[in-house]
Image (cartoon, rainbow, N blue to C red; front, side, top):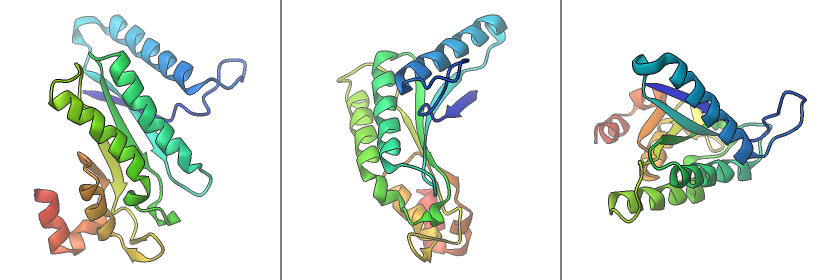
Length: 174
C-alpha cells in the first residue's frame, strides 16, 4: 500500500494563490484518483495522511485543523482510508499531550466507527515520538513514546529513544 502524506495548509495553485485546506485536500484526492485510474487493476491501496507539523516555524492550531480535516474527509469519503500524523522535531518543547485535543477528536471518530454508529474506515493515528534525546524542555525522549501510547496512537514514528528504557519497550509490545 501507499501513503500520500502532506500538510494541506498553505498549498498553492499553479498561479501561486493559496488554496483553502479543503480545496487542497480535494485536489489531492482527485490526483490520487487519476493516478489509480491510470494504473488500473494493478494499483496499490492508497491512503491520505493529514500531516500536522510541530516545529520552530509552526502554528499549534494547524495541528488541530489537520485532525479536524481528517475527520471531516473521512466522513465525506467513508470508503477511503485516511490517517493523521504529528511530525517534526520533539525538542521544540511540545509533548504528545500538548495535542490532546487532536487525539480526542480522532479517538471520538474512531469510537463511532467501532460502535457502528457511522460507516467508514478508522483514521490511523501516528505520532513521531522518541525521535530526539530530549523533549518538552529536557525530559528523556523515551517518555514521549509513553505519552504517545497514552494518547492512543496506532503507530510511533521513529521511536529510537525507546531502546534505552525497558518499560517503554514493554509498552510498545502491548
